[in-house]
View (tube, rainbow, N blue to C red):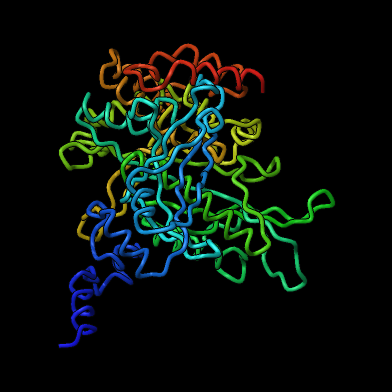
Length: 479
């Protein structure tokens, strides 16, 4: 056998086995290329992939204090340099990434450390690029307390340790696409866009491409569809706007936060490349449908979803803790989930947006809703039951918001009088008794008051640094 044949045989033995179904199930592209599940990926796997696929750049991606996705790009000089990037990451300026959180400018070096299981091929890079999401670490080698990534992971783990709950979540990412009108346009009807199909919506192709890109990155997608909102062009805005939604499948709390950040990044990139605009603003124009960022939650205990009711019609304990935490702390959570003046315009105009501190089975006015779950004809659930938090919108910082929800559930697990809280905020009882429910805040002053009163819940266990809560209060007070 020739030397060339020997080398090919050796390469064949080293090459990861490819899953014949990888192009379809799962859609994650690197699972098919590497031949392993992400949790099993190693530095050697990614180096092999980098060389085999002829990749040119490595992009370390991470979320800053503002909730936006950041990038640090490398052109590896050698295999050893590539290994150093993937194993050790790189330093960055923490005072610039996390302004106002108390990181001193003179001691602001932090480290971006890659999480190998998050790697994906950048679908928008002009050169073939391997992207890897990173966490943030301080000089002491520990996760950086001021990092939103650290905060949501710490809150998630604290909840697991304190209650045994593995909290799963999914985000409903609503957004508007805008473009200049053309003579050939055949779409446009406010409040009639829900589940509309092409040619009556112009954003269908972009939305479907977004679903494909997000799935290839490795995010679990549930579905996508057009939404009710449509805004015609005016003298002050020559764009027409239509609303769409991408909904993810349930996944762990940190991954759910990551999914929202990546969805914004993908949708903005796709819109930019097509000469369109993508907007996640809570309200585009008064009187029209706003864009929420509803989150569905499912507390998982010993591998079983526990958001459903018992045979007697009562909620199981984990669901009660979640419900109670959300209604009790919903106003304070607005500090992380409703961060612009448009947030209050969306909530005040009443287009299926919550306006009262209550929960209900079908009441879209409520802060928290219990949606139905799809079943087969034989009664088998095809998706786990969830509890929907309807208050947040597109201005939310998903990492801090979901960390706050985890802290709220931990509070609910130890709260006294939880049954009374749930009884007092049950929309059905409120309606039957013909009494007014407590309104949700409709200005930043009330949100600041709420987070001041409940900051101890968020800071418990050292999850939210005191300086971060101080900065949040300062920012909201100045708006």
